[in-house]
Length: 351
Image 1 (cartoon, rainbow, N blue to C red):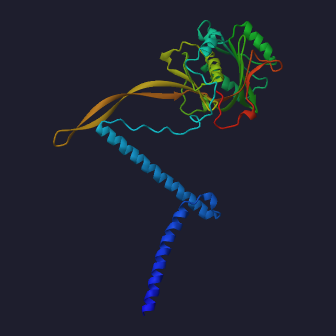
Image 2: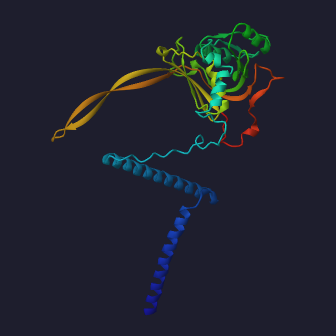
Image 3: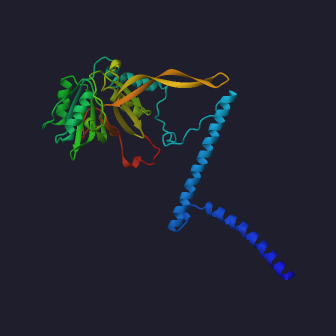
């Protein structure tokens, strides 16, 4: 009997050790990476468990942060600093060509570049818009949208004329820029902007074009001169491209028209948007408790809200090349040309 009891006691001790080892094994299984599991079902289960655990940890951190902010507000202390998310934009590679606010050489170059006469309002911009020799069905619709966006823009049919002859004609007629819309397979796929009379010439790839008629609940633009917003053109090359785009529009916007044209640069992709805005005042009711019996009184406060309505069109541009002078494919010198070898990292940007 005694021997049996000792045996059972020994088994019980071993069972306790097995329980601890099982717990350790379970913890190790929880720490397993999905890539180390060969079985497909187990791998998906491990991945789902890790994903769920990340969500739980994120909620706990958010609740703790809200509690700290609430405690700081009650005690009248400073709020804890907000964490800046890690993005591709704020972790970009260091670029020596990024413009600085105290760069005297940059400001001196602005006074002597090709766009200074327009940006100083010595002359008004006058734009000639034309197409490639083989136009498409969506080309005329895109041109009509551009004519409503850019003030003082005129459309001329290309016909069989060479582009150099069109540039000479535009110089004689005192045009300040020429925009050529290139089409491929019945779809506009490129944009050529030629500054006159001395250049430069910028070649953009055009993508994700949405015409005004294809936008839901779109607005109809008026004839007022729009406000221009240029965002994130930070490098020397981006600054030059931004000034070129700025020279297409008049420098005195008509604010009662409430029109905004935006060129937003993000990761070297220039997103174009065209909006109308309106300010509205809305009353928001807030309840406040007063007295010992907990009586509540409603107070109305007015808030000014800005609403946007997209007018279209909508498209995305990417710079392919920037050339000195007017359009010349044979003897022209290029300031900058994009090549596939330059894309060495996702965090390397040029504009």
